[in-house]
Length: 265
Image 1 (cartoon, rainbow, N blue to C red):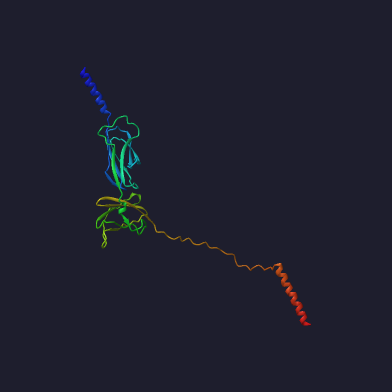
Image 2 (tube, helix red, strand yellow):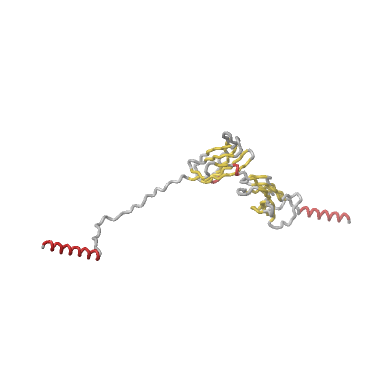
């Protein structure tokens, strides 16, 4: 009897263990604003199981949802998603795996479904001294300085229209007398109009991304002014005096004739 009870308990334990699936997600502890946030993970859930990866911004009150993506478990039982962070404020965030519907099975104790990370914004460390709107023939001019950077090396990674990527550019900064700003300057000739994105890196990693818009030089319109043809000159029409003027002139003529007759007498 005791053996039967023990065997039954073992079956119940095994059945419960078979329904306990594991889901583990990984995320970096810190990331620079503008760099892609890479979330990866593994699971033992069956193929076809769906859940969301949700990004929340942690606030003093209720966490604010920023974005989410659906994950569908495939044969590899692993997953990876990239989230853009451009425009996201610096601060603390978390990523959480949330099921759309009840998976019908409990998560195992080894599961990790939430990760907390921090976004830091270094965009203010890049001060440009050239406009971001440039023209073909003068672009791509990348000039500016980094406050308190001194002499150091930064790397520029440029991607152009249609995703074309140019070779990374290592630039050595310079200083000016009595100043600690690190000035940089590099011109990368480009012949195609469109948007160019420049990623800045230093020894601490990614700093920020700056968008340059390159266009063709503006040319003034050379459309000829319309020619207006005037009709040939015509003699002006005869002037007709108005009735009051005509009467006044007639009276003057009569007075002149009478005066002339008196003088002859």
